Image (tube, rainbow, N blue to C red; front, side, top):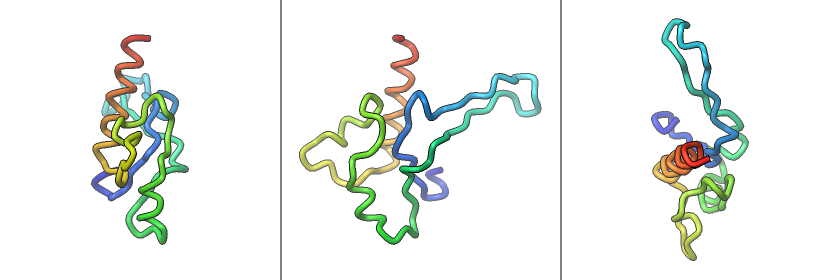
Length: 91
């Protein structure tokens, strides 16, 4: 998604699907669903959208909770994956 200049902005355990068919051509695959909060270059209100705190709080990047969090960046989505993995491991 980052290569296509799209930020998901709601990475959570409920928005990641993994196919279980490891025998299929290409093996198991992962998919991100629920793109309603995604932001992409070319949006009319992109700068405003990137400033909004969005997503599932348990999996949101810690930086987004700062007093002046700045704009949502690709590394914020990456940190959300970290929180998802931690949640799955400790659950």
